[in-house]
Length: 239
View 1 (cartoon, helix red, strand yellow):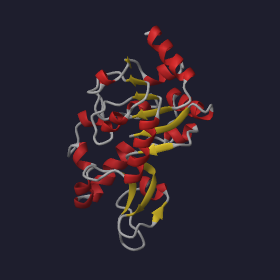
View 2: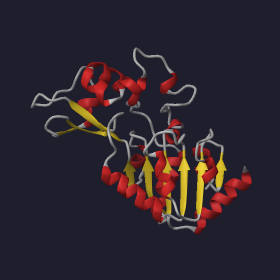
View 3: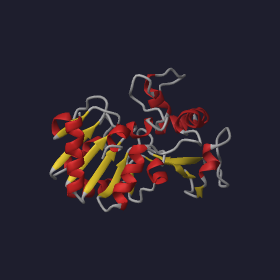
View 4: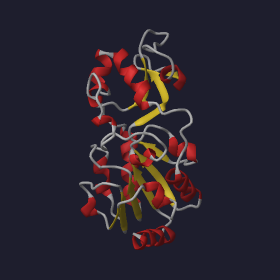
């Protein structure tokens, strides 16, 4: 493992065109549960399967139950802080080495750590808008309280997150593809690479070194030049 960390450290030192692609595992060390691990949201019991509750059709059919789940399970506690991975990525950006963070997370911890160029493929809990008239609302209007948040026009105010059955933002996809395609080093971390189309973006990489940091195996392990089976915060604290 020390040899793998040393190799990653060398590649980071030699490059000024690094892109990071991350998922839920980046935030688990901050105390935010992931989805697909043994203790993840998808392996817990609810009245409906979580993947059904956070779908577009369920949101329209039963918004009250959607918001009960959303506030209880997708809004992190206010004392959640960025961990070593978030902080080191922000430092690498400020050092002129990291070009972009591409994340599947909706928690905003990369920005809280100081990262400036963050592409949020699945949106953010920190932005909200009316589903009917598109009027923006502060996050507290949706994330706090109870019941269904309503706009002055009568529409439902929703978080700016991508639900199942909804497409990703085309501009975000375009930017992510361009950053990945142009990168010298692509570090993929904290993701099972099981959610599409986001996971498929790493196929656009044409650079020198692809590194995969994840506690479990992924369908793309064979594509990576270096695979590190370790908590991502531990890895980034060493580079």
